[in-house]
Image 1 (tube, rainbow, N blue to C red):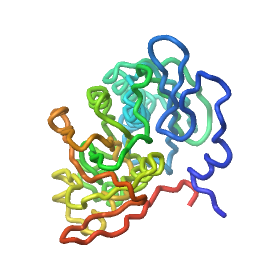
Image 2: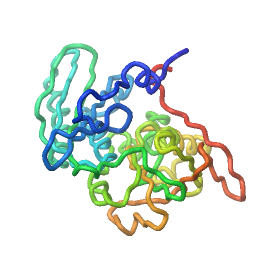
Image 3: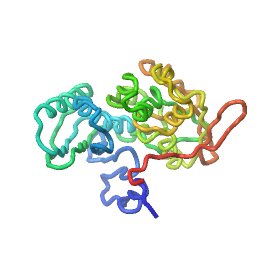
Image 4: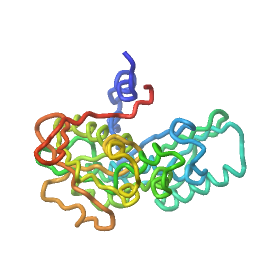
Length: 311
């Protein structure tokens, strides 16, 4: 039977911790380590490969930004404060003009989120970028995927579907949608502000249905989403794309890098964090599985449509 990314990790690399310093290993948005002291370390690694995760339509400066931003989104999903990162860069050949633009975008992200580049590796081969980002969080304060409870409200930051729609439309994508694909905004500040309110969290990188499923399985619960509450940006709403494509992009498209969180039912995240758009999109339930409330009393099963690197 073919292995997808998550089955592969579970089967071959989900090892039991061997040291007491490993608080949380494989299986969440990031690892959680306790080296001693006042704070724990949060560590995450992401790789972007040419013609798999990006193509030549992305400007090198945007690629530098995005390479770091996707890892910072994982730190945000753990409510961690970024402190440092490493860069492993594989290049077909040194290109000074390309490297100048790429490093400018990478540096802009590092400066915006106040973290240092502390090492890495440079090799020759097909273009790929691997970032390991390191954050800090007080003991016991890191968000995890497990922790959602029946009755909790599900909230999402920002808007959904812009990046996936831009990817589908290709050269015809409006600039505002393409910006969301090429220049995502990790929600670090919001995560730090809401650290005490959130019971379970992750970032939406593989698509809402896939990432919600990860949270529900980890928490041993189910959920119902309300389709008419899925937040749309003005550019997404005005784009003349088929309604079924838009719905697919919002439910199953990746590259949103927004936060999906479960909180107590009486919490109002928009009031607590008004600088960022927050939308309550559903409810956690005791019955396992995912459901979609389409209105007028129609509730249908929602299946995860995870991105599969090995499909």
